[in-house]
Image (spheres, rainbow, N blue to C red):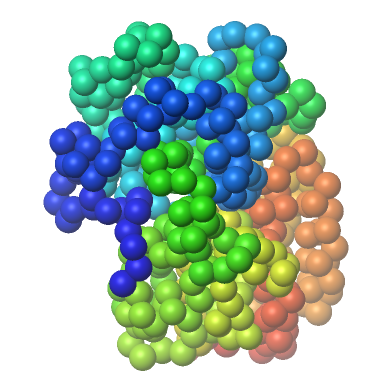
Length: 423
């Protein structure tokens, strides 16, 4: 049994109360920081802990905070990205429903580290219950003296509000989210300047994922080395929430050490393959990552190990497929989502994704030709020249399909039907 850090207070039927959170050391990190550490020291501890962003980009959290210049203007903003629109990903919702004060404390500490007085939780509209929980518990924290003016008598002011998103995938992109918060169309903006220089309302803004922020109180309470020692690999640090879905017996959200092997996640924690099926492939970090195959079944699940095989850990949402699953159909389903969710700002994304969707549809329905495979490969390359990271992520499963399962695509074309369908 691995130590539970982020999900220590998880209960089957209710959230953890403030008293329960404090009984486990909650807000101790905040008290110590306000008494003993400067904002610069907080940023350095997070950098030493190798806390990488858990939202998919894996950028060092401490380094991002350090890019806010000492003489940067005020006010400064901290934005918590709880949009979580990535298919297969649900870890942030689990965290909020398990222990909301963990996120609140993490936001206060992150705000202190960049000298921000305003924190904003940007949350997807489908998470209305989570939004209400946060609004209620923010009030509880304020009454306890952890939020508002002069928190804990420190002279530091921090306030947090909840902002409900309009509900589009592109809103999870940093600059698009800033546009959305300002009431603008959520198109991405090409840096420079970066948001930490000119972000929300042209002021310095740091945006972090829910899981990233939830790690911060534990690091500042227990130390950088403690956090690194939680991982099973030299390159990893901390624990990771893995959301397992698909053809497994126990789909769910599991907190495991960074670097745990994929095979262990599936066999020991997710209960093995459903109905005794055979593992065929998985997407390791949500819909915008590439396929892992049987060859990668024992891979260590951390950022560097996945990078070494040309893939990404992403959000840690492991979507599992068995031998009887048609991966052409699965990829078509994902591309249909991405084509619908494109903001339409740039030509490669706006035109390329529907084109890929239509080619995959023809292949899946028995109307494909041999020319479709090189056409797909060519279009995928074009999408890497889009305005933001949306399109490259969207074509990752297509590229994985063509790299590892081209024979399956060819079988669809040669048989003029999906080989996985009975009729």
